[in-house]
Amino acid sequence: MSVVLAIEVSQRVGGLALRGADGSIHVESIAEDRRHDDVLLPTVDRLFASAGLRPENLDAVGVSAGPGGFTGLRIAVSAAKMMALALGARVVAVPSALVVAESLDADAVTGDTILVALASKRDTCWATVLTHDGAHWRPRDLGRLVTAEAAPLDGVAAVLADRFLPEPIRARCAALPLDVLEPRLDPRACLAVTERMLGSGETTDPLELAPIYPRPPEAVTLWNARHARPSR
Image (cartoon, rainbow, N blue to C red; front, side):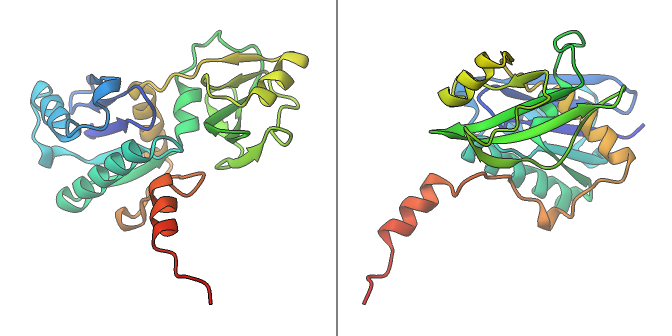
């Protein structure tokens, strides 16, 4: 059996999941207050040790690619690239919205269509519509940045969004009415999606692996503002 590592640190709470050569799954959480610390690779080392494996045993690594926190995504993607290039492992870029859907309890939603809203800021969010085919959740597309008025709520059974969901979208949900559920991003779910994508050949060139950023990172915006050339 392939040895597969899944990295889910795209949001405030995350962790890692490792499928061992014997089929067992090893999981370790990363505390919210340490998700930006230099703990990712030491956690990988502990997981491999607990599974009786060495890093060179790694066959594939899946990374929750966003959208999400700038620093968490940057660290996770950089680590996945490094492991792929150094160890020859395959890479899977997992949309974080798909991890949210995969983390849902079986009876959490009665319908077969949901909207996952991530990276909410001011009156916009990154919206991904997913449908259930009877076996798994599948995204209609990679998602897009939408305003409150353009959020695609028609036909969905529930919205998965955190407390930062723009109030106008929350008000639209209340008027329909639609349940707004707190999203979970379970590293086990990231592992399950990674393995399905591997099975269907959905891998990414490590050199082309990149986070999904819905907006220019604030650090980049500030840097550009400070170093903007004066107009003539």
